[in-house]
Image 1 (cartoon, one colour):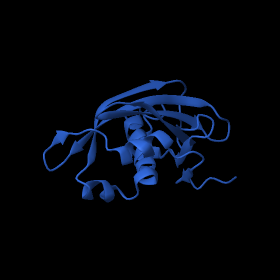
Image 2 (cartoon, one colour):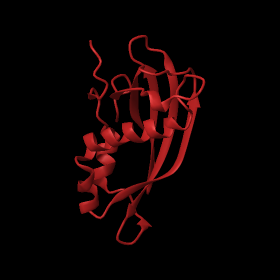
Image 3 (cartoon, helix red, strand yellow):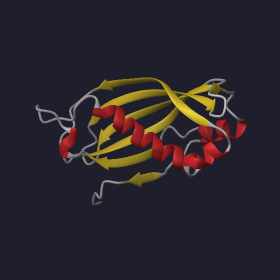
Length: 151
């Protein structure tokens, strides 16, 4: 199972256009943040996304919930930490926690649920064992940064 104390981490910098008139990250942008972080996680677990499609597999979002704890602002470096949640027969949930890099402020958490589909039939399918194994293992200790932060 995933290492709870050493999750996959993805860092990115908040851009000016992601902030609202109050000077904080606009709530709808968190769906983008989840998507970007999960794309990096999926790439780490499964390789290039095209690799899934070549197996006639894809994932589609069926649920996304976000809970905000503190505001993030322009130029903050955020760190998304991802671990597996529930693994069902045809769907799986990922849990994300967002922290501000530097001071560790807990910003938000999110749960996103995907269903595995077969694109050629546009029908859901049982999660193949090869994907299930990778989801169960996760990517402990992996850090990917797009933020350009300094240590």
